[in-house]
Length: 264
Ligand code: NAP
Image (cartoon, rainbow, N blue to C red; front, top):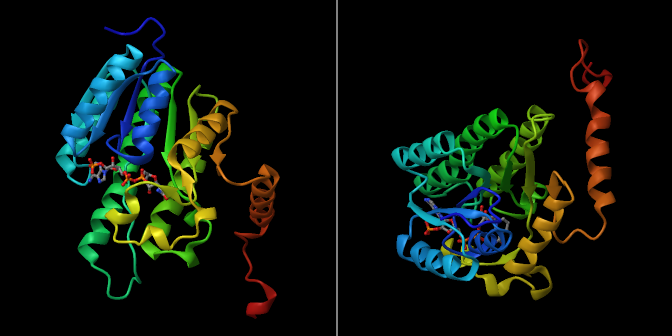
C-alpha cells in the first residue's frame, strides 16, 4: 500500500550499490515509492525489505541487465505504462580503464550499451510519459570526466559527455512541460565502481574522494534548487555559469557561409 505522503514512484537504475543505493534511501525518506532496477536481485530485495520497514513505502524490485535489449525494453515499457512513476534516476553505469588502442572492444561496447543506449531509451520513455502528465523529473548520472576527458579513459569520458549533452538538450526540449531535468556530475565518489572496473581506488588522493552520501545529498539539494547541472564539489557555481557563457559566446560563429580567414 502506498504511504500517505507518497510523491509517486521513483524508478532507480543501478539501485543495488553505491550512488543508486543511497539515492533509493534518500528518495524513500522523501516519501517516494520505489522501483529498484539492477542485475543483483538478492541485493535489491534486501534493500527493498529494509526500505519498506524504515519508511513505510512501496518498494518493487525489477531485475534487469540493461545491456540486454529485452531487459531494457521491459524497463522502458514499464516507464511508458505505469502512470505512478514520477521520477527516473538514470544511474546504472560502469567505468573502464586503459587506452582505446588495445582496449577490450566487446567490454567497451557493453559499457556504451549501459552508459549511453540504456540512458537514452529510458530518458526518452520517461520524457514521453512525464510530459504527457505535465510533471515528473529525470535525473541522469554523468561525471566530471565529461569536462576533463584527457584525464580519464576515452570511452567512459565520452559516454558521460553524451549524458551531459543529452541532459542539456532534453531540458531545452522539455521546457514548459512541467518536467524537471538534472545532470549530476560527481567527481571521484567512494563506491564499488573502481574495483569493478579494475582501477586501484586507493591510489586516488583522499582529498579527491567524496563519500557517496555527501555526493547524493548535494545533488538532491541542487535538484531542489532547480539546477540543471550539478557539480557537487564545485565551490562556486559561477565558475560553471562562466563556462556555459563562454560556450554560448561561440554560437554566432559556429555555422557560417564562409570559412575563417586563417583557413584561406
Ligand atoms: P557502483 O557502486 O558500481 O554501482 C553501479 C550500479 O549499476 C550497480 O547497482 C549495478 O548493479 C548497476 N549495473 C551495472 N551494470 C548493470 C547492468 N548491465 N544492468 C543493470 N544495472 C547495472 O557504481 P556507482 O559509483 O554507484 O555508479 C553509479 C553512477 O555514477 C554510474 O553511472 C557512474 O558512472 C556514475 N559516477 C560514479 C562516480 C564514482 O566515482 N563512483 C563518479 C562519477 C559518476 P548490478 O551489478 O546489481 O547490476
